[in-house]
Image (cartoon, rainbow, N blue to C red; front, side, top):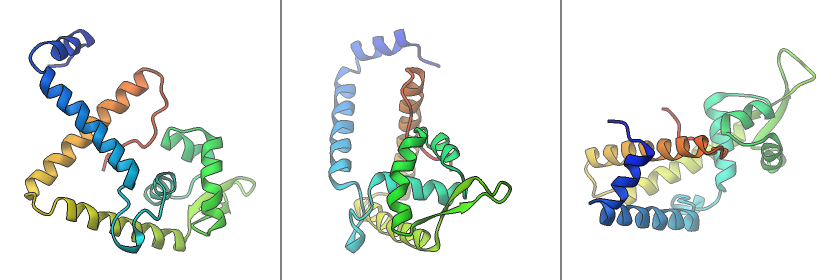
Amino acid sequence: MPTTPEMSMDMTTVGDTGLLDTLQHEVAVFARRAEQTRLGGVGQVRNSMDRAAYLLLNRLDKEGPMGVKALAASMGIDSSTVTRQVAPLVDTGLVKRTSHPEDGRAVVLQLSPRGLARLEEVRSSRRRLMAELTQDWEPEEREAFCTLLTRFNVALSSRMSAQGVPVTDEPDAS
């Protein structure tokens, strides 16, 4: 049954207050710990790539080469932010600028082989961290957590969009 804002308000005042207080507290603690550690992974790669760089490289890997405007639109941020965030990635050789195949005047951002290798290194480290943190979980618990966390992120993104807040870090549909 879909909830309306009135129903949501009733839910927070009738019966579920303790559970909702616990939920909001645990989300706040998670956000703080995730930011403190950036859930960077384990080993030498730990905390070695900031969130913006990771998300840009990940998006270029999943969606392929694209212009600044397309990348900004796909990430829900403005072009000037993408330009600022991608500059150090170009300087370090993780992203390369190439000419658009159909319009040589346009510039396309593309993940370089070095960028792909670095992204895979970070992904692997982060996978090891997730495995370590959930090592005593059953596979069904991991799957349920992923499903519920994705559902939570989608609901949060939808709410932010409805309020006119630019949504960044959209959860992947895959």
